[in-house]
Length: 181
Image 1 (cartoon, rainbow, N blue to C red):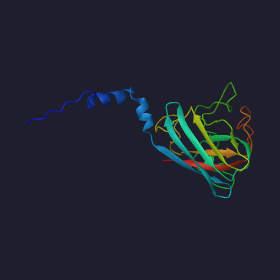
Image 2: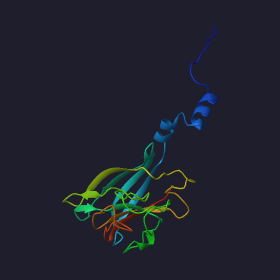
Image 3: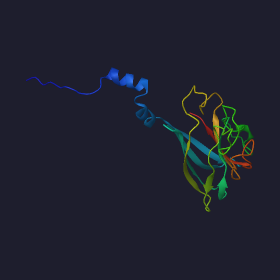
Image 4: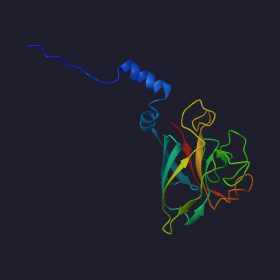
């Protein structure tokens, strides 16, 4: 007895061509790896994490943190992957590969690392989802967060006014996490 199997659909070569030409971008994005960032406070204590994942719109950032002061806080991507307590100055300025001015409301901005403010609840917790639409996790791109010296996520003590130079008058750096593979 002979049994024949037949298959319909795309050949492996055609599928590879679709992926390489970008026709299968959504499937490629769904399979992108997550980058997990540990957030520490000025005393070096773990206060939470952020999960970054490449999506069609940019980089999705899911923040989950505790033990933060309640209220509105500036939230940015900084240019260097270093978070040396207590002041986190090692992270440098905002991630800004295009040399734009600071501020989501600035006509000559924003920096690629400028993000919307976050709101920490009265109990010191935050769970938020943000999409950074001017950056990527794809290595070799001008706006990649995974460049030679890395980058970092930063939470500031005050709200970002989205126009003041160079950092929105967002106050001290109170939590930081290195973005790395």
